[in-house]
Length: 418
Ligand code: UD1
Image (cartoon, rainbow, N blue to C red; front, side):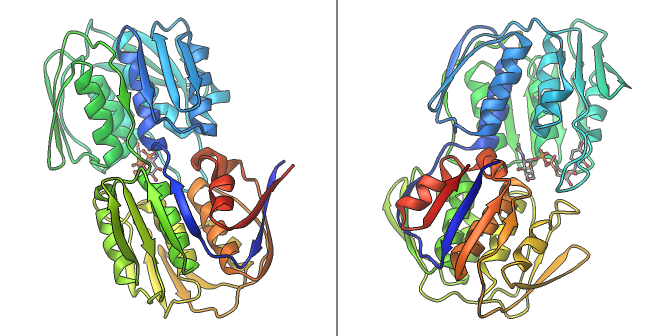
């Protein structure tokens, strides 16, 4: 299994091109199952998760080509009506396949996504809404068996009891071809959801967003169109935090600050300076890192849970009893024991992490646990004296395109070992 070795301390200095958003690419690639024809999706990051989704689509019988950052789907006729355990168990986002497939086919079977290291993450929000749309759902032998009784799905007026990115995407996709107007309330409005909506509207869907309410007028059919995926705001935020943690200077290209408005405000309060170079290019530097009192993760436009672990790591040396509250996932603290291996002084009570200032951090052998938690280990390694070895780096390869090459180009002493 591959590892990454980092010699610390190091300062991030240089330029990084931000990749296309993983979390926007996955549902957009999946939504091509709703329509006929062919299309080209650009700016898709070449990551373990996107390559994995390509394998799923091929297994279903789709003609797919994925090279560099371009995804081409030539036919969306599905021959196989089931998404198997060996795929779904590895990538939770696969559950979003169910909405589009059961819209087009009378019966579809998908393995239960199963447990997840960052929380229980049920799929009740997805299944309850699909049932209301006239789908019979059975759970048998570890699979969700979905069956559509009518020719088309029923439209729904539905308020999600909890905000969910995946459930919003799944149900809005299903509603695009339903028999009438659906109104979904209490929806996720993350930029990745909006990018999916923009793509679907290009393909002929009729979807409108107002606050957290999404109105979908069912149309007869969709026709695939080309699209360019938005930049990855979480990748960008991760590199910005690494710049702050190491008092570096970094230019990000292909970056959209509007998708990160609230986090950037928090980072500015902590001492980040931002200079606009062009519409999609910004320079960041931070000479003095100020302690943060307390921050809580929240759905967009709040502070993203996907930047929580990296924020905890960034504060290790500057904290003054700083608190980070995780409100989205009940167990997203698996990076904490790993950060303690560097000498970090962190305590957890319930959903609150308290970071106490540590003057000296030392490189250690650690284990990557989930995509974003893994980047917090990179940040800690860059702040530490000596050698850090990160194991299980496939988590990083799931979410950060060419992270080792990007960091190396910016002066980080990082190497990948087999
Ligand atoms: C997506 C993102 C992930 C991000 C998360 C929250 C992708 C591929 N992944 O994950 O990076 O961390 O949004 O911004 O886009 N829940 C239920 N029942 C359900 C569905 C969700 O209880 O049926 C709960 C979850 O356990 C969690 C909360 O709702 O506590 C939010 O999860 P959700 O927004 O659905 O996350 P994902 O879409 O899986």
